[in-house]
Length: 133
Image (cartoon, rainbow, N blue to C red):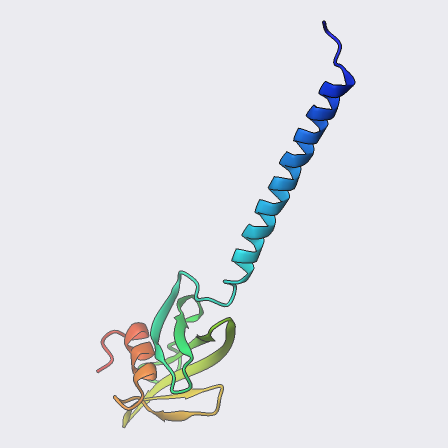
């Protein structure tokens, strides 16, 4: 009674094999889902608007830096993640104040005064420097 027949051994082996295959399939599905969301915004990212080209802009809050050794208000640095579908790219911003008010420049070559006409730059500045007006 303590011995297994070859039939029982075969069924046991087939059940273990099926469990392994199911686990592999579930792991594969989970990896596909996770890899499809790599370019999406992270939890710490703060939505600041949509660019004219349709890319959503997210301020990467962990990239905010303040250099207060220069000028009265200092210089603020940050990075914005621009996302459209599964494609993403990064734009570095620098904000500084002068006698005319706050200005910015970014790694795409744009530079301007921060106003209502630059809503993404205004939202970034409002997040980094809450009492900037």
